Length: 304
Image 1: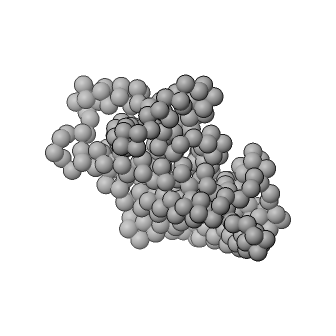
Image 2: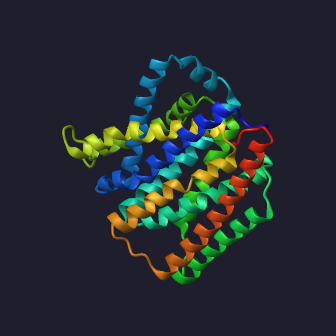
Image 3: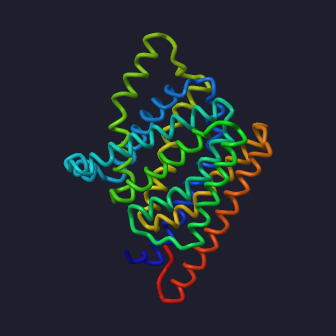
């Protein structure tokens, strides 16, 4: 696969970075929604995102693209799969933030870049050097150290890393318009979300009461959810998956800071060992990726 042109690479870098900074600050937003059960938050995220995206598609005059996606069974099937992956990722993250596990969720997103590297090797044929392989193994050792010290598998971390890694892979392979693709994903999820919100409303247990602070926060979930995903989906089409993996540690760094500095979560010696291994592995991988980019530039190409 040839590298993208410089302008495309720069645009991809900017949009992907914007997505990760936004995701890095997500714990602050979802911490404010802690009184609302995760599935209710998920339902509102889906429905408000669908509305936001419908308005955006109208403004951009891209409904024909949506119709083409809905009429293409293969792409529709792929987007149904990515909808399942991203909704699973959402609800796990929402639950983790609401139950004081932001540190563990940040660990998942630190692992995520290395999962993306492995997926790029396995499914896209992207090369992996010995140093990069060593970085992946070092990160695995960090996770293993945390498992041994805590006496349990960090399922939140692993689930977040795997679901979002697979989401990035299938989104890249789908090669669909960012806005239209996300609209179809939310459209797939919308019937279940609507049924769930309606059930809560009938039972009188829903938290959406017009005029309240929680209601405004839930309504804002459409733009807050959709914009970073649009930026990510747009950027991932212009960058190599390994480059996307390199940028992904921006979000968990910000999440880590939120967990320790804002929410006062306990940072233990086991955490220090695990995070230390992963940070070193990311440094190794990053240096290798930067060297490869410089070689590509020296050869007249543009880094992805």
